[in-house]
Image (cartoon, rainbow, N blue to C red; front, top):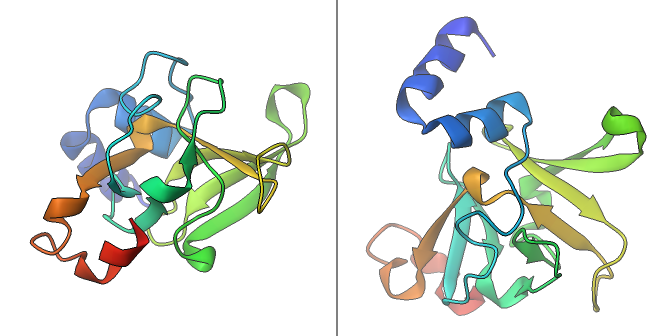
Length: 143
């Protein structure tokens, strides 16, 4: 990403969203927008609007961050090895904007056994009743 592109994102995104999506930071657990959010709808990339997760696949992992069993569209995410912090993890980024979202772990519930542990600051929630009006009508049945 060029410095100009990064500068434009910094001008548009709130600090926490910018730091999480562009600088790979992590927001505090239990002190973020969606960790205990239960409304039906769609979670999209805060940068690009790319559809990422359905509320149907969200679960309470007890970690303090929103957790999902799977992405809405399997190829919407990029998974890469992350050896920072002295441990091996798998980082999750959105495919279109390449926003840092969080990490995926092999300790989730069925059917996938995966836990996508995602920063709220990387997401924007669209409630189900607004999907059609905002151009996400194709995902109504997924929520």
